[in-house]
Length: 232
Image 1 (cartoon, rainbow, N blue to C red):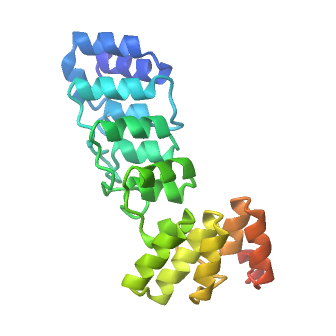
Image 2: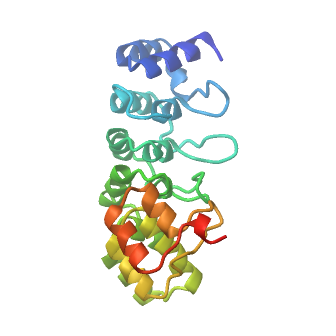
Image 3: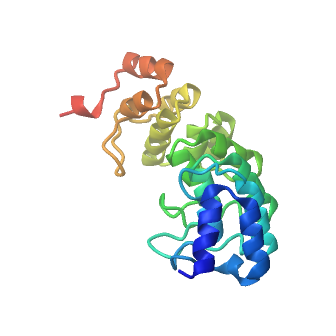
């Protein structure tokens, strides 16, 4: 990492937009740098925990200086800065990246290679997820279920009848997202109330309890759902 890159990373983490501006004015090529070989400076802006002071301003500054708004992380996944903003529930930065032309449905998420919406839904970042849908993101059925978008879910299933395991996954996500309406619809479609997904040993009831969705938890119990620990 060069001295200028190190200073740029420090400025971003401190939310010091003016310091970043001075660095970019002095060394315009800095906008396309990868300080650690994997992340761009836009990724640094979007990095955990997100919602950095002046984050949107710094993102706009970097793009204006030549940063590729859709640049990919280099490593175990191919996430863009928009994926990271979505995964951190950073709605202001998400809007700034989309306004700068970021691909809203870019693939490469750490979650099954999906879109920024995939990350937001999987990590329970509902403000970002709903904003992405408002901005035009295309939710898959399980993502629509997690967000309680039952009309979209019904329309999708009417056009493309789902397999039983697709219904089970959507049901699990509905409980993960705390959506009682979607869960009711999917149970009526034959969902397994105790499905255990391959990504973590949590039943829909476990997922609803984690989401602190009390009404949904009560409903699941009334319909005979179990925690994973109760299944043996």
